[in-house]
Amino acid sequence: MKSKWIITMALVLTCFASPGAWAGSLKVDGSTTVLPIAQKVTEAFMKEFPEVSISISGGGSGNGIKALIDGTADIADSSRFIKDEEVKLAVEKGAYPVPFAIAYDCIVPVVNSGNSAGNLTLDQLKAIYMGKIRNWKEVGGPDAEIVVISRDTSSGTYEVWEEKVMKKERVYAGALLQASNGAIAQVVSKNKNALGYLGIGYVDKNVKALTVNGIAGNEETTLNGTFPIARPLFMFTRGWPSGDALKFINYVMNPQKGQKYVKEAGFVPLY
Image 1 (cartoon, one colour):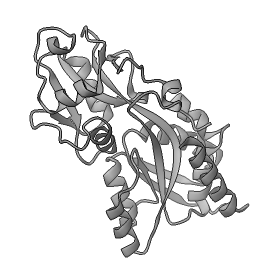
Image 2 (image 1 turned 120 degrees about the vertical axis):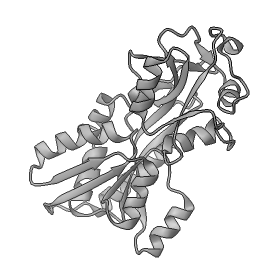
Image 3 (image 1 turned 60 degrees about the vertical axis):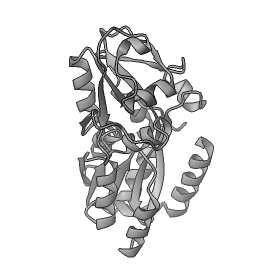
Image 4 (image 1 turned 30 degrees about the vertical axis):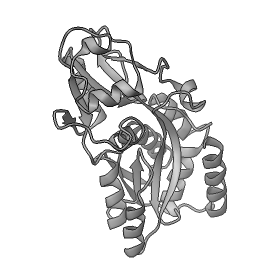
């Protein structure tokens, strides 16, 4: 998967690169998972190219792709791949979204730092999020009710969780839904019985990461495919990129530039 994306995108960027720069502005919208990467890269990019103004917002992958389709965003950040129906709608509106894998990520289950649980299997995670396992003592934790925290359905992280953990089953109605990775991290850090999930770049000392099937989520296990909840992260452009959009995408994917900030944001670089 990794090599395919790198080769494909390298060919695209080589074919469409141009020596000239079209100064102006860019609007980037979408995934809160990709947001820390976009923020760090944008800050560095605008220092190098001060003639380009970039605004960033993080309303979720689905909202970012919708903004791209509607023409209100130049680049959509997404923590999932675009859906067939979204491609169809985009084509109907005269644009074809072009994907660029810009980083890798793994989705890590997290608990409060005071929780004694250390590992959950995929089957246990599915049962908890379906409401079939309700007490931590059933999975090696304290005798306390599990407070299940999930992302809302507009989130790309939720959709990957639904695919890889839930196997298309729905999260049960008793789960508390949060609009961002940051919101989940905050809730879990303050609730000793909470269970949530985060993109690896959001895991910090305020929460405790659990292993899944005995495997820790990190750069090595993400790239070698052993961690079971891993994924690429994307930026989509509205048609083949040109001008400032092309310059920005090239910058994000540059091993000495944007990819350095991918790692600084806590995610896994392409190279």
